[in-house]
Length: 141
Image (cartoon, rainbow, N blue to C red; front, side):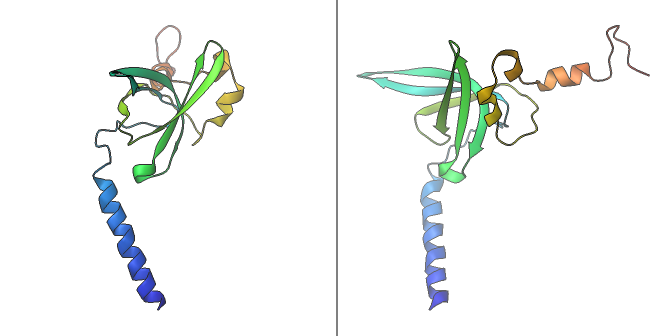
Protein backbone atom coordinates (compact mmCIF):
# COMPACT_ATOMS: atom_id res chain seq x y z
CA UNK A 1 0.00 0.00 0.00
CA UNK A 2 2.85 2.37 0.83
CA UNK A 3 4.34 1.94 -2.66
CA UNK A 4 1.09 2.98 -4.32
CA UNK A 5 0.80 6.11 -2.15
CA UNK A 6 4.41 7.08 -2.89
CA UNK A 7 3.81 6.70 -6.63
CA UNK A 8 0.67 8.84 -6.45
CA UNK A 9 2.51 11.50 -4.42
CA UNK A 10 5.36 11.51 -6.95
CA UNK A 11 2.92 11.93 -9.85
CA UNK A 12 1.19 14.81 -8.03
CA UNK A 13 4.53 16.56 -7.48
CA UNK A 14 5.36 16.18 -11.17
CA UNK A 15 2.00 17.68 -12.19
CA UNK A 16 2.52 20.65 -9.84
CA UNK A 17 6.07 21.15 -11.17
CA UNK A 18 4.77 21.20 -14.77
CA UNK A 19 2.08 23.78 -13.91
CA UNK A 20 4.60 25.98 -12.07
CA UNK A 21 7.10 25.78 -14.94
CA UNK A 22 5.10 28.12 -17.18
CA UNK A 23 5.09 30.84 -14.48
CA UNK A 24 8.85 30.79 -13.85
CA UNK A 25 10.78 33.87 -14.90
CA UNK A 26 13.39 33.12 -17.57
CA UNK A 27 15.60 36.23 -17.41
CA UNK A 28 16.97 36.27 -13.84
CA UNK A 29 20.46 37.79 -13.81
CA UNK A 30 23.17 35.93 -11.89
CA UNK A 31 23.06 37.41 -8.38
CA UNK A 32 25.01 36.51 -5.28
CA UNK A 33 24.65 37.44 -1.64
CA UNK A 34 26.26 40.84 -1.02
CA UNK A 35 25.51 42.23 -4.48
CA UNK A 36 23.76 45.57 -4.78
CA UNK A 37 20.63 44.92 -6.79
CA UNK A 38 18.05 47.28 -8.26
CA UNK A 39 14.55 45.79 -8.46
CA UNK A 40 11.91 47.51 -10.57
CA UNK A 41 8.48 46.92 -9.04
CA UNK A 42 5.25 47.52 -10.94
CA UNK A 43 3.00 49.86 -8.90
CA UNK A 44 -0.65 50.21 -9.90
CA UNK A 45 -2.37 53.38 -8.68
CA UNK A 46 -5.92 53.66 -9.93
CA UNK A 47 -5.77 53.45 -13.71
CA UNK A 48 -2.08 54.30 -14.06
CA UNK A 49 0.87 51.96 -13.79
CA UNK A 50 4.47 52.90 -13.04
CA UNK A 51 7.80 51.29 -12.19
CA UNK A 52 9.35 52.00 -8.81
CA UNK A 53 13.03 51.08 -8.34
CA UNK A 54 14.24 49.67 -5.03
CA UNK A 55 18.01 49.40 -4.73
CA UNK A 56 19.62 47.54 -1.87
CA UNK A 57 22.10 44.90 -0.77
CA UNK A 58 21.03 41.31 -1.34
CA UNK A 59 21.13 39.90 2.20
CA UNK A 60 19.13 36.72 1.71
CA UNK A 61 18.06 34.33 -1.01
CA UNK A 62 15.77 31.46 -0.10
CA UNK A 63 13.38 28.94 -1.57
CA UNK A 64 13.42 27.30 -4.95
CA UNK A 65 11.27 27.21 -8.03
CA UNK A 66 8.20 29.41 -7.95
CA UNK A 67 8.68 30.06 -4.20
CA UNK A 68 12.16 31.60 -4.48
CA UNK A 69 12.52 35.00 -2.80
CA UNK A 70 15.25 37.59 -2.30
CA UNK A 71 15.57 40.12 0.51
CA UNK A 72 17.06 43.52 -0.27
CA UNK A 73 18.16 45.98 2.41
CA UNK A 74 18.83 49.69 2.03
CA UNK A 75 19.19 52.71 4.25
CA UNK A 76 16.56 55.38 3.69
CA UNK A 77 17.00 58.63 5.66
CA UNK A 78 18.92 56.80 8.36
CA UNK A 79 16.35 54.02 8.73
CA UNK A 80 17.05 50.50 7.51
CA UNK A 81 14.43 49.23 5.06
CA UNK A 82 14.18 45.59 4.03
CA UNK A 83 11.91 44.32 1.34
CA UNK A 84 11.23 40.75 0.29
CA UNK A 85 10.63 40.11 -3.40
CA UNK A 86 9.27 36.87 -4.87
CA UNK A 87 11.60 36.31 -7.84
CA UNK A 88 8.89 35.01 -10.14
CA UNK A 89 6.22 37.60 -9.29
CA UNK A 90 4.54 39.34 -12.23
CA UNK A 91 4.87 42.63 -10.31
CA UNK A 92 8.67 42.39 -10.37
CA UNK A 93 9.41 43.91 -13.78
CA UNK A 94 13.20 43.46 -13.89
CA UNK A 95 16.32 43.04 -11.78
CA UNK A 96 19.69 44.69 -12.37
CA UNK A 97 22.93 43.94 -10.54
CA UNK A 98 24.59 47.30 -9.86
CA UNK A 99 27.67 46.15 -7.93
CA UNK A 100 29.12 42.83 -6.91
CA UNK A 101 30.73 42.33 -3.53
CA UNK A 102 32.72 39.50 -2.03
CA UNK A 103 31.25 38.21 1.21
CA UNK A 104 31.92 35.06 3.18
CA UNK A 105 28.43 34.44 4.54
CA UNK A 106 25.26 32.94 3.08
CA UNK A 107 23.00 35.37 4.95
CA UNK A 108 24.01 38.94 5.80
CA UNK A 109 21.77 39.51 8.82
CA UNK A 110 24.70 41.10 10.67
CA UNK A 111 24.26 44.20 8.45
CA UNK A 112 21.15 45.04 10.47
CA UNK A 113 23.24 46.12 13.45
CA UNK A 114 25.89 47.97 11.39
CA UNK A 115 25.61 51.47 10.03
CA UNK A 116 27.63 53.87 7.92
CA UNK A 117 31.05 52.81 6.75
CA UNK A 118 31.00 49.57 8.76
CA UNK A 119 28.11 48.32 6.63
CA UNK A 120 30.01 48.88 3.38
CA UNK A 121 30.90 45.84 1.29
CA UNK A 122 34.22 45.21 -0.43
CA UNK A 123 33.46 45.18 -4.13
CA UNK A 124 35.10 42.69 -6.43
CA UNK A 125 36.81 45.46 -8.45
CA UNK A 126 38.40 47.05 -5.35
CA UNK A 127 39.73 43.72 -4.23
CA UNK A 128 41.35 42.80 -7.54
CA UNK A 129 42.71 46.31 -8.13
CA UNK A 130 44.46 46.39 -4.75
CA UNK A 131 45.97 42.93 -4.97
CA UNK A 132 49.73 42.94 -5.48
CA UNK A 133 50.16 46.69 -5.92
CA UNK A 134 51.74 49.35 -3.74
CA UNK A 135 51.12 53.08 -3.69
CA UNK A 136 53.76 53.64 -6.38
CA UNK A 137 51.99 51.23 -8.73
CA UNK A 138 54.87 48.72 -8.69
CA UNK A 139 54.00 45.15 -7.80
CA UNK A 140 55.32 43.74 -4.53
CA UNK A 141 58.40 41.50 -4.96
